[in-house]
Amino acid sequence: MKKTLLITGASGYLGSHLAHRLVADGHVVGIIRRATSSLDRIVGILDKIKIFDVERVHEPFEALGRVDAVIHTATNYGRRGEPVTSVFEANSAFPLRLLEAAIFNDVKMFINADTSLDPYLNAYTLSKHQFKEWGCHLARDGRYRFVNLRLEHMYGATDDPAKFATYVVRACIGNMPELKLTKGEQFRDFIYINDVVDAYVSILNCPTMIGGDYIDIDVGSGVAVTIREFAELVKTITGASTRLDFGALPYREHETMFGKADTSRLCTLGWERKHDLRTGLEKMIAAERSLLSLVEKSVKGLL
Image 1 (cartoon, rainbow, N blue to C red):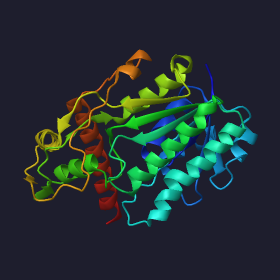
Image 2 (cartoon, rainbow, N blue to C red):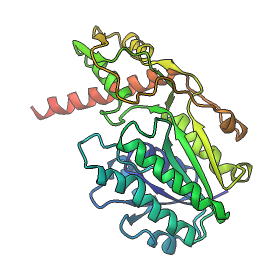
Image 3 (cartoon, rainbow, N blue to C red):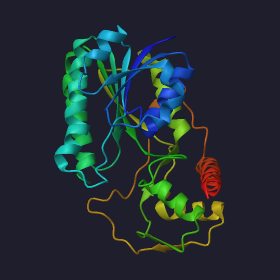
Image 4 (cartoon, rainbow, N blue to C red):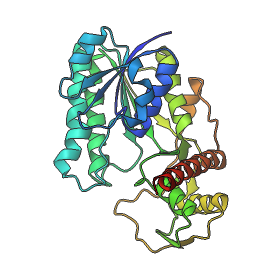
């Protein structure tokens, strides 16, 4: 059934993949973005979506008419030295204003991209936790459903180079002499981006099967591997000679040592994982290599 959907973070990695998929599925899609955000990731669908300014949160609801769901993926990880107030504004204050606007305009579902990491790991995790608590509080009167997706570690080609998976893959593709890592004893659940998008689609397709006004749903592969195993698998697939220097870096304060999604709720909605870790990494590595080859050809063409 065709729906009218409003997405934040469509210029980012997850949001852009969702926008492409939902447009392809025939939905009416609007996006909220900052004036400074690059639209390169969604340039191919700009003529098929409606774009709204982040400063005017009520405008999309007035322009789109009845919105079936808001999909909030925009986030600030605080990786570039942003002040805590900027991280709080992006991850707590802005989505709370949007949520209030959605409730005022009678939107029945708000899907939030949360994190599975410890709330006190850093400013990013704390601000995400704070917004989730507001979503839970406001859902108590039963006017809307707050679906909180606890995302595990998604990966795929062209993601942010500061993310662990992308950093390791690109280091090995580039045959970096040495890669400094922690001991790598942390267990993580890595999920391929296409499987994450499938999870969102399953939720949108089965809203009546999601009970309660507030619900947490884990989004991951359901399989945990150590950071060491992940890095070693990347090295094997790429054939890199990179030395993996485990133990060169200390663990972070409040480091989560074990993380794994419970996918049972997702599976009741018809979702299933289509990529194991090796399959997903093989696709990611092939795509990254293809992009690197195109860049190198372009550079040669300019010389």
